Image (cartoon, rainbow, N blue to C red; front, side):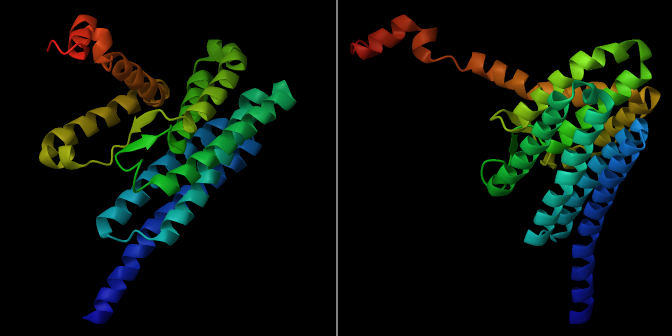
Length: 258
């Protein structure tokens, strides 16, 4: 019995690390494809890496096989798959013509991504347990890949990449190290309580993405990036101090009339 438990435990630890390795492999392949100027394949590899990265953490939590080694390995893989790979991709695809400005922009993206991961590892059990503090680096990488697929598929828009992509890289770098909060999607209570509806929504989303993958991946990734600033702006407007919302009532309270 003890031997069986040990084997199960070893299998539980191996599975999430294998998924992390698959994510790392996709990131490395994206770098190779970028060097060969196969930019579409590089973008697809980044999206596959995002998928494996989402699965490894989920599997580790479901099997109770989370470990400090797994967290560190996952972070190192993320630096390559979602930092170096998309940084090199966007440089080769859109920023190379800018010379020093171009590769410094790509380097800033990679640096902010690494800082984002370091901050996440130190705050994962406190500040970032329910919400991400700053844009997650996989989302930033997916946004770059989605934009490149979108611009590549729609030829007339290719000329705008020289203006749009440098701005996007700087915005993504800033959002990763900002204090803007993003939804984590880690709370599975809603999906457990509504399993049938969740399956239907997942199937519909999958079909919609397959119909126009370039457009839908661009919309989904860009929409998630914008969700953080939009939610913060809406909450900021709602959280108006009471004395500003009701100045007469506030003054009455201070004078002891209420």
